[in-house]
Length: 341
Image (cartoon, helix red, strand yellow):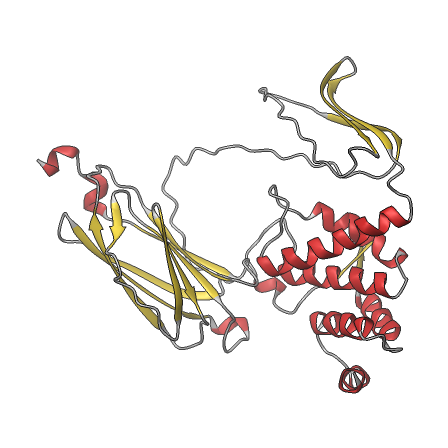
């Protein structure tokens, strides 16, 4: 504990490190935990009444409506620290904000930030029982107009912890109104699923926010086999010498599978998974030094008009730190089924 208190006195540069330090001091019962939390809150940027924190590489991440995984984790550590230090009021606005950052499956960007965010939200949910927030009698209605209710939910102390959901049949144009009547606290989430017709093939080119250099080349002179060559390294613009675990998802052209046991695990490739139409490689780390992988493929099904496929490389702990490349076979794209006979 003395080491952590000394580090706090010397100064902590990044918000993420300070949030971890604050949580550790709070767990250890240090008298300096309040000072650390105060400093963290002072560093926050207040947006719509909610404190938010950024990290140095946020500007280098790919665009997304979700905050970075680092921002999610910092908010979670602040909530947990505030609860331990009996400063629940400092975490209430973050509880609402954190709930709004979830994806449609209820998680967040990565495994790590999802674990911490759910722990923080669960802690405040348990706290709600002690503060009698569970004394709820609430009706939520979703309507298209004053006389047309398309979904209705009633929440009371008997079903307070039960997930309720409804599927609303889509129309060409929908204007939904959500109203709540009664007392209590509840979370309402609306998920919209839709498809977009891709009329033109998308060609992904390198942009200034890409975290990895990625080169993909397909060699397929034979009709029944192909070889995929992939090389990647860390972009020099990122300001890092190495990453933590990195995921490489290799999409396969229709009809192809990887030759069994053709990729062996080693010091870099820690795990290989195969899924329909995809290979997933778990890399221990990616550095500034280029590493290359050769993937032999074999034709399993005869497919004509073969479409392009993607190769995605991303940081396991910060999925927005990613690069995507597209590859295709021109002659397979133009071929017909008669080619196989």
